[in-house]
Image 1 (cartoon, helix red, strand yellow):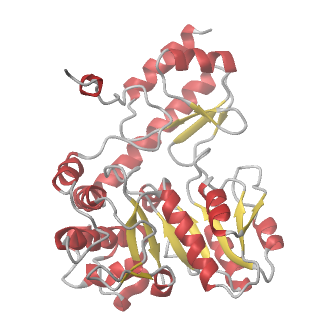
Image 2: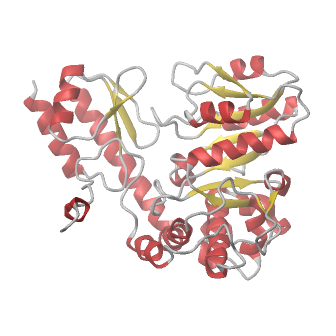
Length: 383
């Protein structure tokens, strides 16, 4: 008898408008399938996927500016125009001490908080973050028993620099900046926050889980090119188009990763810094493959396409008399009556809402002008 599971089909992305995940790149899909049984958590046994993780970290180092920031300290990873596979011999291995492929933004953010806590001398370590910070920081605070101090954002939804400064004291162990907020796509003033954190002797963590693959082409100052940025979260399984799960945590100083290391006595490797033991070889391999295929030109083209589409969509919504939050990255939030929201959900559109109640559309690689035009037709049908 055939199982009901056998009759199910993967969900189509045609009407998915609020997800920050997308269809994997074909090369990433192939790599994920090839490395499904591999476990990067046991690198001495699964050497091939361990090498791919080093390549993936080198690719992420190029995207975030870490390779350029480290210069000769970690080998030349090829600079901002290099993909993972282009790193010279030895560069990827050197950079692998500065990061690893996580299960996603939540693990990366939890680990960034854990590293900061364990490197802090504070009696009661606290994390200072804008109210726009991802809910994973609330998880981190609960799991790690640290105080999470959320401070207001300004009128445009970015961290209020003065409020962050006022929240810093002798117990502060970490400042968080958001580079591509999940509700509005806003980018915090990272250089200003880095200056404040440095003055207080506190590391700065940048959460660029979603925005990280758009930001190199947006003109923002956000990554390791900014002095004082200590750690960065960036997810290949979002705009990077790797298969789920594939996140990334990178650190300027190896000590940030060393603080996370635990001994692994029954394995052939002495220790590991990852939060999980067994990890996804599929995610690691797909991340390396996606960056090899798309960095930098493919991601640059996608940023331009998505930003143009978000701008067009925002203008179309305004033309229908709806209030729209100006998109900073390819994410559009707009007022939509609750009844209309529920009706559109009932018609199969996968929408979500911000805390304030706006509908939000994330212009991911699978979102097209045709799909948004069809959505607008349904909006018009409700009038």
